[in-house]
Length: 297
Image 1 (cartoon, rainbow, N blue to C red):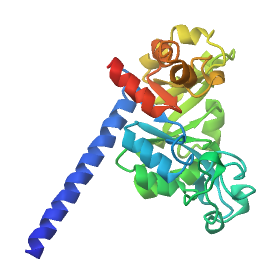
Image 2 (image 1 turned 90 degrees about the vertical axis):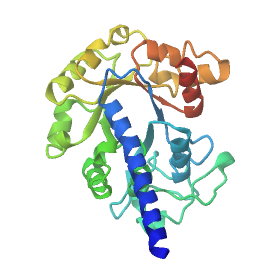
Image 3 (image 1 turned 180 degrees about the horizontal axis):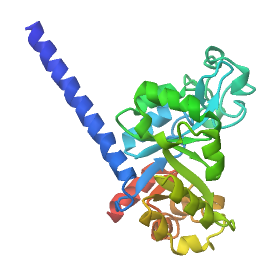
């Protein structure tokens, strides 16, 4: 009887793993298909409005609500462990002070992340490895603020078997990235960040597409006057998606989350972004954006 139960449990575990791998395989396929009509939703710092930002809890909740991507901010400890921390200092988000690099991982883990109203709870600063193990087989991960740590992050992803789930990014031009990371650039999923109101924006995009064919381009624009917004088919025609941030006005010409959330004006926020080519949207309101997309089918 015990042997029979072991077989059943093993079968259920295998079934769960297969379903999980199928889930992330679908997302990876969608990420690499610029003609896919579905909008991919990225949760900025996880579900940070309902849990400490960049915490394991915030990422768990974002995964459970059904987003496609979670965004993490990379930093490094004194003993060279890649951790998740947006700011240069830990003062704002924890009960500690100073830089992550002032502490070893063991020392950093003694601090606690702040929840609502600045109160600290039980959550600690996670490592990239912890986040990738959580995300494994479930979701894609956007590695923000990662350019100084590509090699260290790459090792973590290889160790955890999650390399194909992670999106590396930077606003540096192609030549700079190639010079700094010649050994791994062709082995990672890559997304350049382009400030499209700048004169060389189109040239930067064309150069990247010629050299390495990025999976997507993250377009930043404080005003919505760029010609690239009027016609960015050339990005998708060369095999890349268009990522636009809905976080705050300076990133999207004023077509941000707040307009949708506070004013109920989805036409001039998320609807506008989609109408202007966005196939991936990073948001601080992931649950509401998912509801909107389901309503719009």
